[in-house]
Image (cartoon, rainbow, N blue to C red; front, side, top):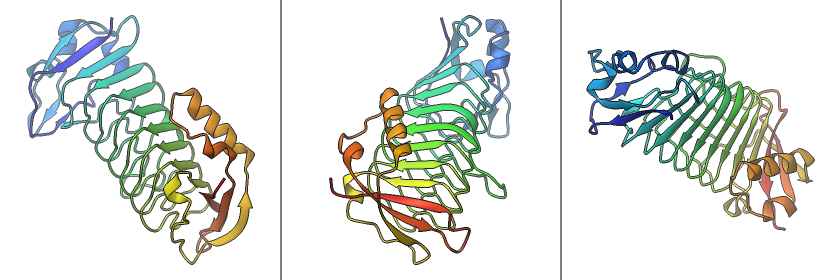
Length: 277
């Protein structure tokens, strides 16, 4: 039986729960978990002041959040193993700096999903905000390993300064996808905004949806390298299907127009744009 945290009532003031850590709660008694201090404004009340706490994570290392957690920040931050399930919306910084384990959100998430994560998997069965898998302001690298799968839409600066890993977005994404991308793979199955790949050094951005079949406006620091049918992309697409991620059949048979850049940097990155079958 998992440890279940059921939000008593929605709050307009954000609550930070980074103190609720899997490696700690799986060894604690129920009363000790309930007494865990959390951040609420400038106060540090007990977890039980805002959540009904039942069950235990000692056997299966599973933690479940229930209710509208759109104002609950830092769910699963620093996670190293185990499984966290959110049955509802979640707030900012879900899975930030996580190193292992799995987080599943049956709803939408806010900004900074998987920021600077180092491993593990995040699956969102809804929409995400800005800066998925991105670097925090003033940092050097975004996510360095792991994967983030989003069934719905996402915002701007997806994968900002990403170093390794996989981000897949089933819907649309905003501006500056892969901004300052160091390495790694970002796959978008819907339309995008402006300036994809600005400042990217290496890595791959795949624009795989029908909205991308009419090539987006590329920055002048990218050069067309002609059509391509990369084998590694087929491997990624099969992997996504194995994870239950919706991949259109056309993505397997299509050719892709390859654009190299950003030549203001190393020029070793690529943007693949799906062409007609």
